[in-house]
Length: 110
Image (tube, rainbow, N blue to C red; front, side, top):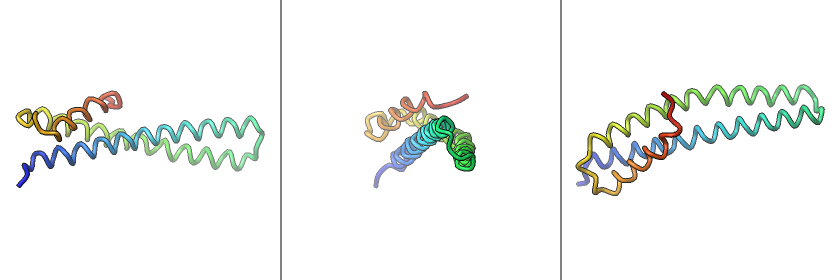
């Protein structure tokens, strides 16, 4: 039977990677919508459609803080597990978890 700690490392690594991708995706989407709104305004399109895009932008921006909170929690969770399970250093899952922690560090807020 496989070590349950390795299974936890694998699961928490997946959660961190997925949440990080999700946050980046929402930020890109918000940026694209802002550019679209700017372009629509420059072209003088109907105010109704511009307002609809603005509503979409607001919805996207309200999701980002929640996503950031989940990302911070997943990061702290995995980081604590990596620090606690140093005897698993040889395991492939441990190395992947350590790499995920290092890569997502730039997306974490205090």
